[in-house]
Length: 413
Image 1 (cartoon, rainbow, N blue to C red):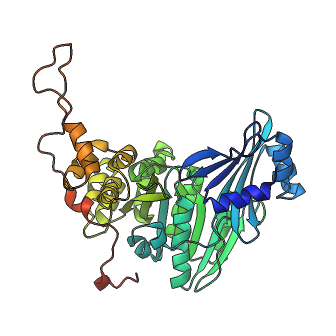
Image 2: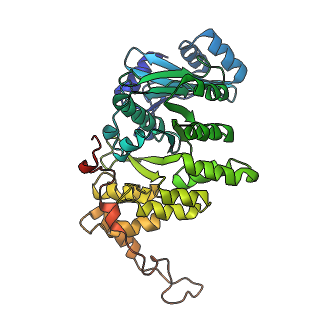
Image 3: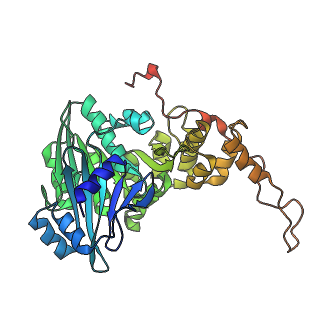
């Protein structure tokens, strides 16, 4: 196996990941799909061991053989950087190599709402970037940090496992610390970071109550803190953080969370209509005074309504509002949007309100309007699962392109 030829293919085919598994040819994840290299022979474990171990040093290899897991980073000839996870499955070594671009993309390139620029320039608080694995959380967070780097004279400290994007100092000075190489322990690095005079702290993934509490205390003491979390949307993120603590701490943590939260930015990747690449759908919850009050009182269910009502003034947006925008702009099909919606019923109502010009939307509407056959159990006339009576279509906020900052607010676009 020529691993470097496979890395070349990963870059040339714009694949996000390269999978190496004994007994299968190499697999590339392209536009969300895992595709085998049909021209390549099946890999042996010996080939995988030799190739992957050759990318690191003996110390890391020995630690992997002891701990049975390892994360490393590898720079490939100034073409790309790879985050590599090495693991055992059924006693055999396997690996997944995630491609990381050398250039950090701008928020505009990623298609993210421009309100994130305003959020990134906050002086203190906790910013959580949420989404499932492979949804681009790290890329979005890095783009926000790079925006800070270009626009604010400050000290940024990152704690990563491993280091992914590499920053070059511009207006900011950035120190990047890698677990296992620059610091031995994530918890200890978090404890020590406040002694390094940081203005901005990138903590990486929030995994437990201790790291979450450390992030909130850092935000409380005047720092801007970035973290990622494996949740689907804003509500699930709020629940995950609050449920991580024992009941006897719930009141204290809710108050601290309400005081320190700046924003939850949740995202999902969808297949574009032209299959050229993936496109991001984003939910943005901003901790307004009203949202903060609801959070402090534990009224999590009411925060979703506050999010939807905050689109005009605060530039918040729900997933359904952004999904409806993507359909209206022709970026994704209605079926693709509905498959990623947290509430498909509400999204269907929003799509109906966008107009009948799109054949894609017409097809979805026709499917919904097909008469239902009465059930054999003697269903009553007028039964069925149609949309609730009197429910507004709410197309206004959905059809409006989200995330644009008005020039009179003075934000740099």
